[in-house]
Every structure is written in structure tokens, then in C-alpha cells.
Length: 397
Ligand code: HEM
Image 1 (cartoon, helix red, strand yellow):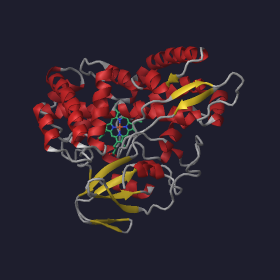
Image 2 (cartoon, helix red, strand yellow):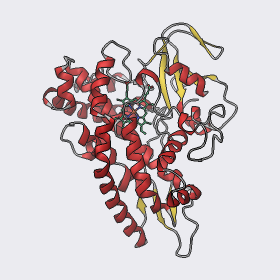
Image 3 (tube, rainbow, N blue to C red):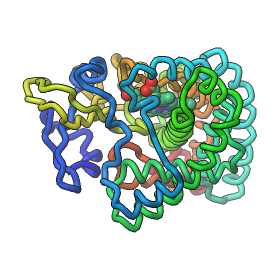
Image 4 (tube, rainbow, N blue to C red):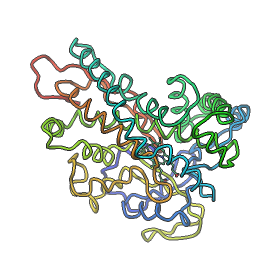
């Protein structure tokens, strides 16, 4: 069964391509090896991205009516777009996220994170637990994104709620009542985006000027608001939790023997926020000796590809800089490879550099809990508290 099997990421028994049922009677081909995942991602003609945003739990008429009431539409724009307009839309988004523009945000972000870390340190020193998801990681990526891309003037909480609702509506196993509630949340915000897409400046204006239809502008903003911030706050939370259990790595960071950038790559390899990504076979083909009929849904297990012993020396150990560490597929590959990778890496590097010392001398009160979801890990909290006064062991989870 899909979903909870993500926890079996280290189980050697998985075949290279496994036929796996889902919760509604469908079947998917789960691709578990690095080389095969890469092969699929690199061939957008045989394996199209069209199903990337399809709801894994088909929506009942009641939920579809709610979405239609908000005039919700999601035409192919970025991740699910195999059409001729993809390169142009992607290029406009990539310009907004150009490495030089990203680098220019680093000093601002460092100051913000440093201030927060100082406050969190003071709270811990007073003996009070802290949720590093809520108090540090949750809103940072959205705040940075808003400095790079003109976004609708909406409260941070409203954007976060909408984005998490979208990840649940499209990628989680759900019952119809929940689908209706999520459709209402997603539809409401879609309306905000539609108004903004018609008049907003920056990226929206550039897409309009390039002749893209209003639905396309909305679709691109929709995807960017979900992919461009929720994924990164998930990653920051998962990486900090992982580091809490890696005292030797933290010691290396302190002395400078371990590079921050290497920690971020090893984090992406072992704790990717996006564990799978989908493609659909355009023609009858074979993959790793397995027949793939046209129309098959392929679930590419990115999380497991990062632990493939054919690629990385010590697949399950967090060893920054080890051979193969950077060959993970956390950002996908090929024509649809993540355009926000430089931004995500910059944010993670700032957080690791500034916040890792917080994890010394604390105990993990509440590790992140991740709900059932085909693709996104969506940790809900990560609470730490000062370890008992005499403890010098560092974090324990
Ligand atoms: C740790 C954080 C992130 C991870 C793990 C991640 C991962 C991914 C993955 C797996 C894909 C699909 C790639 C494929 O189909 O080959 C993707 C696509 C994409 N990501 Fe990210 N992403 C992250 C952060 C971001 C950020 C910060 C942004 C922008 C602000 C962003 C924007 C996009 C866009 C626009 C696409 C679609 C690209 C296209 O289809 O041309 N992502 N990302």
C-alpha cells in the first residue's frame, strides 16, 4: 500500500519497480532505484509530468461543486505542464528566483534568523520548551519568497493554511467530508489569487505581458505559493530534527570541520520534504525490465533514490560530504527540475549556520509527526526543551 510504506525507506526487499495498490483501487508503479528514477525524470517524452498535481483521492461531486463555486481551475503551468508554453513560464519564474537575487536576500534572512535564535535561546534558558517549527521554520520561506516575488497581500497564516490544505487535498488519502472542507479552503484562496493575477505586478504582470491567459497566471502563482514555501519550511523542520540526533555533525559545524553546505545536501538526501513525485507513461514501454503500459502512473520514490547504495557510500548515515551525498534527487531532474533549489539551499544554509547551536544541551520533547501523504511530509511541530541542568550530551530524541 502507498503512503505509510514511505517509512520503509530502508527496507532492502523492495524490487526496482514495484506494482503497488492505492487506497481507492488504483495501481501505481513505484520506482525505487536511483538510476531508474533518473531515467524517468530525464525522459519527458516517454514519461510525461501531466499527472503531477492529480488528486490521489478522486474528488466527489460535492467537493468539485465547492471548487467550481470558486471558479477554481488549475491548467498545466509548471510541474504538470508538458505543453509548449512550459519553457517560457519556467523562464519567467526562474528569472524571479535568479541566484543573484537569492544571494541578495541572504544578509536580511541571516539577521532575521539570528534574532529569532536569540529569542529562542532566551526562552530555553528560562526553562521553557520551544516549537522550532512554529517559532522558527514555518513562515521564513514565505517571508523570503514575498521579497522575491510580488504576492497578494494576505496574512502569513492564511497562506500557510491554504498551502497545507492544498497539499492535503491533492496528495492525501481522504474521506468526502474532509475533501469538501479542504476544497472550501483552497477555493477561497484561489479567489484571492485570481483577483491578484488580474492586476498584480512583478511575476504576475510579466506572465500577463507574455500573453498568458488569466488561468495560467493564477495556476503559476498557485503552484509557487505551495511549492515555493511549504516544502522549504518542512525541510527546515526535518533537518533541524535530524541534526538534534547528530551530535558529532553539530560538533563538526562548531569547529568548522563540517561545512554547512554539506550538511544541507546530506539533509536533502536523507530528509527530503518531498518523498515521491509522479509521472505518467505516454506509450507502452519497459523500465528496468518491467513492462509499463501507456497510461501507467509512476511514483518515483525520491526519498529512497537518495539512499541507493549504488550511488552513496553509507546510504543511511548522516555523513556530510561523503561520496554520493550530492547525487540525491530531492529536487527532481530534467526539464522540470526544481527552479527554487538555490533559494531552498540558501534558506537551509542560513538556518543550519544560525540555529544548529540551539540543539546543544536540549532534549526533544515532541519529534515532528507527519500525516499520511503520498508526496509531502508536512511535519506539524518540533518541540525541544532544555536538558536537565547537568546534561552535556546534547540533544536526544
Ligand atoms: C527543500 C525545498 C524544495 C524541494 C525538496 C523541492 C522539490 C521539487 C521537486 C521534486 C520538483 C519536481 C521536479 C521534477 O518534476 O523533476 C519541484 C518542482 C518545482 N519547484 Fe521545488 N522544491 C523545493 C523548494 C522550492 C522553492 C523554494 C521554490 C520556489 C520559490 C520551488 C519551485 C518549484 C517550481 C516552480 C517547480 C516546477 C518546475 C517546472 O516544472 O519547471 N521549489 N520542486
